[in-house]
Length: 427
Ligand SMILES: Cc1ncc(COP(=O)(O)O)c(C=O)c1O
Image 1 (cartoon, rainbow, N blue to C red):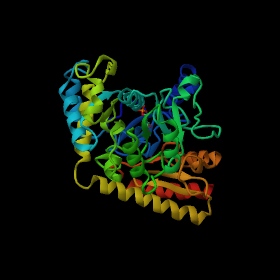
Image 2 (image 1 turned 120 degrees about the horizontal axis):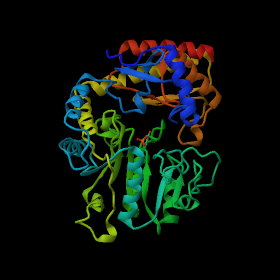
Image 3 (image 1 turned 90 degrees about the vertical axis):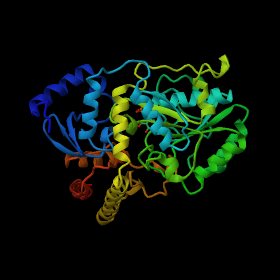
Image 4 (image 1 turned 120 degrees about the vertical axis):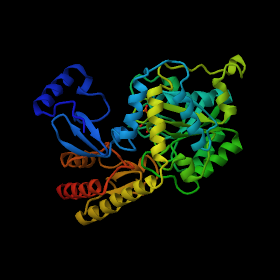
């Protein structure tokens, strides 16, 4: 195992104080704790002081085949030696687009960008360009990246009356808020009435097919598909998380509902900055200046779009994911944790439940039936204690989610169950 950064408590101390000085809030803004990870291998990571963790953060999802996978490393080392970015087309990006089009049923063509936030921002613009209408319907609690439009009612601090949205961040113009129609997840009747009210201005619907940790109730995604057909709206699945994770063909394959366009990220970049918008050719055509009228053309360029190193890492990652048994293993390991967690929660009498599905799940500290953003609000104090308890016992996870990998071993699962049970005892 490579060990290029010294694992030393003194180094940690120095970096922590340096981070406090030069980074706002002492960090990159992604996590609420100061842990500095310097190394990862498979599903284990190590911090600069040398503490080892079983990793369910997985770089917030991309490392689905595990960190420093030897085959991914071999490929990227070859690619890097030949130059790292050209701005023009490159062979790896073209082949990755073809692989994505084979895998994801709604995708005939692909446009690469560098992050999921960008993919979602452009997907919403694409829907507006295609329909020549300005409004997009999204669901309260659905996360579609950091653009002004994406950050309407993702984590609203105040309760609004649907379809009014709330800006999740300072600096979002009020005009943007008025272009987003916000609906409760898993509630088709409300969606339909909001579509009717806004039909004149509504271009389409963007939805996480599995919203954060909340599964769609039976018929919900099918109902959205039907409503979009009936009212001639574009349906976009945000598959930044679910793509190549719930199934090789994404949530659209897992749930059997095919959107018009989708966004992807995380897994397809193999641990490098790469994301994409994909969809039907008659919608993707707005990216093609030579094929549409000037007013219908959607300008879109990016310095690192389709970067060869990222595309090569993504291609190799997808090849590994296609191997027999990988998804079955990931689902089994996820279910073992879910079942073990449930047993432990009830043994310790904790007011909490496991929400999610085998590839992605976590605790919600309430006893409500979780079907939408509001019913998923738990006890933030308990959540913070639980996360800190797990981290203290060598389990690294996101603040509201476990990501499972094809590489989690039996040993990882056993260590995690033990840490979880101890944490519940402590709570
Ligand atoms: C569903 C979903 N969409 C979009 C994004 C944004 O992706 P990125 O962090 O690459 O900008 C995320 C990130 O977690 C996500 O979960």
